[in-house]
Length: 370
Image 1 (cartoon, rainbow, N blue to C red):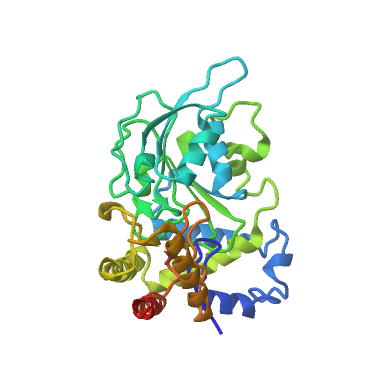
Image 2: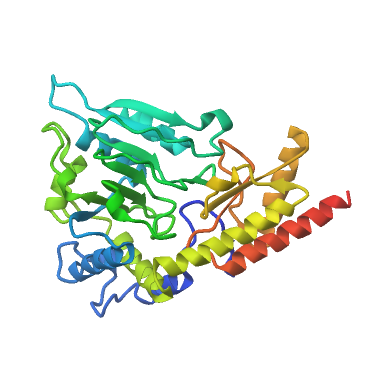
């Protein structure tokens, strides 16, 4: 029996994609072999990676002066690669300054890693209110190497409602948990990156979308696998890419295109989120901790309100356990913040959100009798 999987990643995949992948496990595209077995340089794999890139470009409206790279290491490796390629300098030369806005745990980690290779300036932070809002974003210094934001904050459930104005400074954004969830104007960014395991496919593949003029700036001492120019020059095949992940990503993109594309799924996502937020507004036990203008469409944390910490922990533990028993799994909040969290990515159907709301309602009625 399929469950409703609310994991923040690796997350639920579209059932039609899983069924097609299963059907093609031993014979993909009439080749008599699985994509897992294909040489990445073979004539059998080449159309797979080309199709995946073409679909991503079409669905996101990626301009021709941007390169699409399929890399490894997750979004976390980009915390290093971006400052390495854009701000680091030859030995003996000063590092360039880079601006960051700290809106959550991953944004904080990005800034900490960036400080190894750049002169990091944290221009704003929402830590003062436990990252429950997006702070006003000051303008960068015109000479900054880049301006980094985390567009959607998976753990705390916030998203940017308005992009910062960065002028000539390239805007870099982690879009791991919101890629393809709603329309996004790629040309406003210098570089976008996303781990695949939330809205694109299985864990193991990282997509980087980078403007061509930003490629080739890495100092000579940068390791080859961490240089954008080498990956771009080799068509993402300097070493063996995550072939099966790229194949699944292509199937996910085909599925999304069949639904009507990003604008269509964006409307679906908005309605799913509205359903859950609306119920939480009326709940007697649970509430959203995130300030309304900044609430994520993809990751919706909720906590127990109006009770002592011991009772709150007990309620949360029972909620997660009883929900799992009814096929609503992976609802525990991140270990660093607790509570509950429903990640409702593109592949989560509206029926899953309705089932969660029905369970919350039943749980509240049961608790009200105690």
